[in-house]
Length: 415
Image 1 (tube, helix red, strand yellow):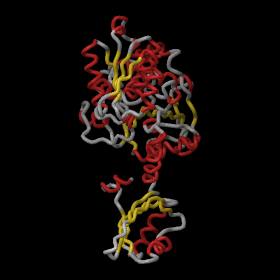
Image 2 (cartoon, helix red, strand yellow):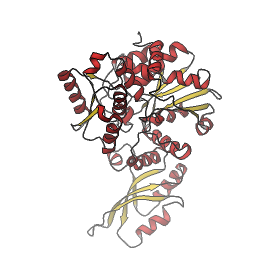
Image 3 (tube, rainbow, N blue to C red):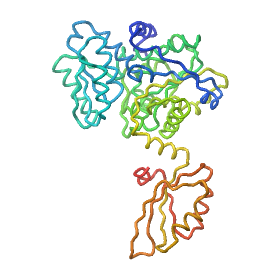
Image 4 (cartoon, helix red, strand yellow):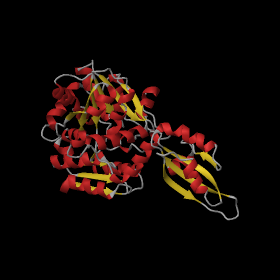
């Protein structure tokens, strides 16, 4: 399969972006280096003016339009980083942009898009989901002649995203052994994989998708883009139902590797980035580094993981912590039938819980016409190794205790 862009396209995009997109920091991570045995660097795209790499592709595409086309304006639909990239690119280039956001977009994100775009941008909020906003943007383009700026499926967008590659090599002074890249629609992976395959083919390029939204893996298996029937949207910056035709072609032509990272592992990595490196990463931003332990990296090899964005809503951290604890095996839920008699709860605390176990959730329903009362109990363990002793004590306890399986609908409701 022929790649839709070349390394020359990426290098031309780098010239266009000079003075617009930042040449972001490449930072050694002692934590990840110690965990993998490799020399791991983080490419800090969260330090861009829009806190993600999306500015690179949006600016490259809009800058490639001729004057007559620019005069008609541009439109896009997005609930996140792409909208911010288009907004700033439009302002820098003096192009009118209309950006369609679904009503579910948080107020702070709407305000951020408006602030980045200034007088060049009109933010239009409507529709309940992203698909509604996308349909409105297409209608606008058909009616006005404005150009649609895709989030990933355009050659110039991929070329712009690929400019991360030359920066990595320039900062290291040589090509890395491995580059690990988050994958959503495939624009970033398509651009980077194309450039490395043509300029430094010895570099191993690995794309990482969320386990619950592995649309590029599905496309490569089927020989073309396909729509996922089910999708976990937690890693929202990389949760794409169907990858692009051009991005698929670029990834297939480059022949790079693909793997997945569990959403729980992403949450563990988000917390580690915050607590150890002081980095606020969105879920997609932690996707590449979350996959590093599973890649079988050669000790001493030079590895770069692209930290793609830092636009994380602080209100999500409670969910992040919950998912991380469950992934690590430290959070578990149980249905407990307590005898309706004095001291039943005290017995549970004294005879069942271990010294490092903590009740993180407790909901009890007392029914006077029954001998027992059910309780939903969430326990946070000091260590995953404490689970088997806990289950053994539950077997001999005077109350009936049922563990809720993590795959059950009830667990997903409360977890």
